[in-house]
Image (cartoon, rainbow, N blue to C red; front, side, top):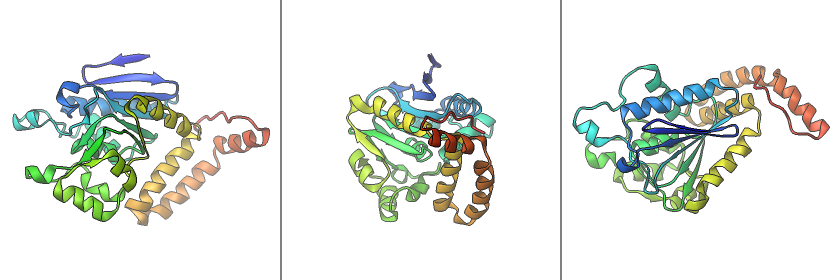
Length: 260
């Protein structure tokens, strides 16, 4: 089933929710309303037990997301700088703090805030024509929406080069640096992203949330890992799904996850 607003399309693919940025004529640039729509969709997905993974992509074949809508910014318009719950949910996504996995299918250029949005995703599949850049310093700004965290995803010297020169890298270079998980032909991008979604959603929901948080913390905040590790050991190893996983393995069948 597909539903749409003016700026964001929702499409259900089994247990995956596909969210498509839908401003192709504006290079899918971020407005305040689009930011809130994404935040609302993520919040709803997290509360829906039938949604196991989000796939985030964009319409058109030119741009995934050009970042902040500079026209709206220059005219003093709404660029999503509030503190309402919808906006906060969006920025929680960009920090990688959503409770379910997010897979990005990058169809074109991811620039500035568009790349910052990708940094919150757990896996990135890119079209060969995709490219990535943080050009803010060339515009008298800096990547203030989380782009300076790119050094948690690629080597430090490459992160400094991208942020200080503002130059773009190709999808292939992103793959070589570890930013991108797979590079595919444009026609194969949707299927590749859905394939990743299916492979991820085959794992237990609580296990996925634990892996996502702990792996990220090991890079971004190692001092918190031991405390959160103890928490997740208590939650996951005593869960119904832990019993189901072992039982299904012994019975040589697919597990039926409950998320508890």
